[in-house]
Amino acid sequence: MTETFPIVPGQLRLLWIAVPLVLVVLGAAGALAYTLSAARTARFEVSAHGLRLRGDFYARTIPAAALQPDAARAVDLRTEQALQPVARTGGTAVPGYRAGWFRLRDGERALLYVTDPSRVAYVPTRAGYSVLVSVADPAAFIDSLRRLTAGAPAPTGAPGV
Image (tube, rainbow, N blue to C red):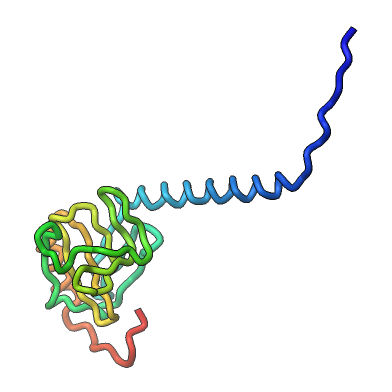
């Protein structure tokens, strides 16, 4: 003979804690996967309209008038200490990939898409920050930026970039 005794049903309070916790963990994992995929798929488009950064949460178009292509230059962040990112203010920083908003050693605010610190194009803007992007040929990128954004109208009023 066997007698069976069911468990007393648990309170639903545990569900109200577990479900949101699982959703937060899944959301964070999805955001991390999306960001890490950008380390391989990010693109930087230069046109007469400006510089378009495509990649992850920090994607944007910077109008040509807001760029300072004559001050742009190729840099090696391993040796250019003033431009090394030292504080992440909103972004991703994992080994081999930094993207988003950072403070540089010289105190400047910068938007980064950096995978290879030895091949970086540094582009100042009139909007109060600079852009640092890893590209295969920084000199060609900067040349394209200068050539395609030449003659951009001067900015009027406060930059809203």
